[in-house]
Length: 252
Ligand code: PEP
Image 1 (cartoon, rainbow, N blue to C red):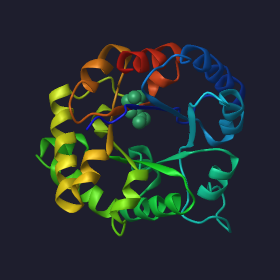
Image 2 (cartoon, helix red, strand yellow):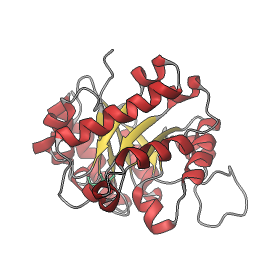
Image 3 (cartoon, rainbow, N blue to C red):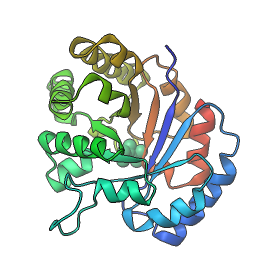
Image 4 (cartoon, rainbow, N blue to C red):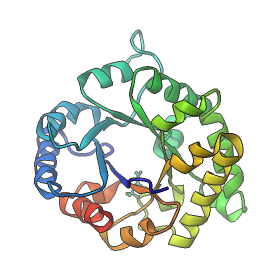
């Protein structure tokens, strides 16, 4: 089956409201004829409403970078999936390696957040990937399969159509060191194989698996040509509207 490509931009802790709105206005113009590709941006929470205003009616989705499992309550500093959905976000990043490494996010926490997103109609983009040490120790499959097993624990097959997976080798994030198409394809195929072994066949067929890690206009097309790579999660290059649009037109 053909899976519609999905390109997402993770703006991390960059672009306060007015610069974020400026990037969004440029994307609105640059991506007016983007063809057969889904696009989302994940601004910092403080810029979400400004970006939503600029992208209204464009079909470019806006998501939140981080959610807490609870819908409301005494959780200082947290973002609620219910509230994110209410203001107009459609997606949430869950389990990004920076959340895991800097903020102590666990696989079990990822699972709780995925379930909270689904309960409130927010589509999770679940990030998994190995460190350089784990790759060098030949543990790539072990690590990503373990991350998947816990992240998806307790989910019914039909719920999985709401999810996107993002394979992001930690050593490739923000380093300029992209996985080769062969390296990335091998892990994407292994992820799809794991899904096939644990869920009905349609889940693996339909699941979009993005690659993330130093994707740029110059390498996007060759990565996206791989049979199991269905899109990209883009950090640094998504801050510049021309390069983000360049990635999208390279695959659209
Ligand atoms: C990311 O933060 O998800 C990412 C892939 O970053 P970069 O594209 O900068 O490597």
